[in-house]
Image (cartoon, rainbow, N blue to C red):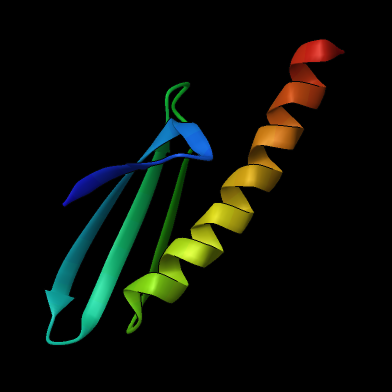
Length: 66
């Protein structure tokens, strides 16, 4: 299932149940960067990817500004 998060408008998240109770989350940035995580709690995966994506956003902005 693909979705967008309000605080990460440049990211598309795709959450897939790979096997019983095991989820894979892939976050794709509009510029092509991606983050992949897997685990048993989809809500925890979303929180982890949110944290990682925000950090990556800060890094991308720093590199673009330089």
